[in-house]
Length: 194
Image (tube, rainbow, N blue to C red):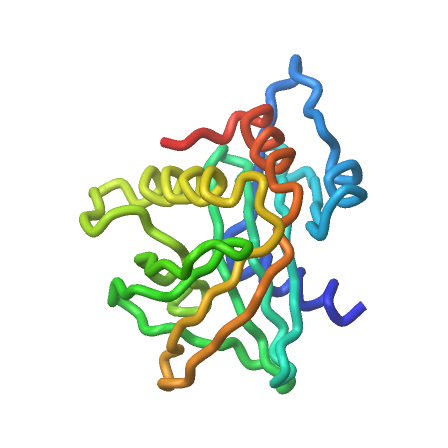
């Protein structure tokens, strides 16, 4: 139950939402994705349409609950973020306004360095695909989310190590198995890479 509460808080921090056209029957369902993976997916209605989000949550050795969230917003924007909440319910904060590099590992592949930025005033960490960002931040994050989905396609785990705003090194390994149906659902709902 605590993981569900943490996921809900992280979801609120990440940005809400996802819309679909009435003549399209979205497949696979959130329940089908859940039953085949470690993702916790939710499909909810709001004023603009349907919100679709999937999260993978993990507690580390220090009692921090980490949530990796993928979402298709109700205005058809693709989003992603990593958030952490400690045992006192404080958000782990990341340095704001600085593009940094963090260590990542997909399954047992070699460790790589990926560029990251922040969102939500430093509460969310997101992976970015290039050093230059255009004026259209929404388009950048959509592209970065789809790039991330293509990087993890077929993978079972995704780990990262990054330094938070207080200088502490944070590291966690997420179960991301069966992410391809998540990407398929995004496409069916109309969330694009740009």
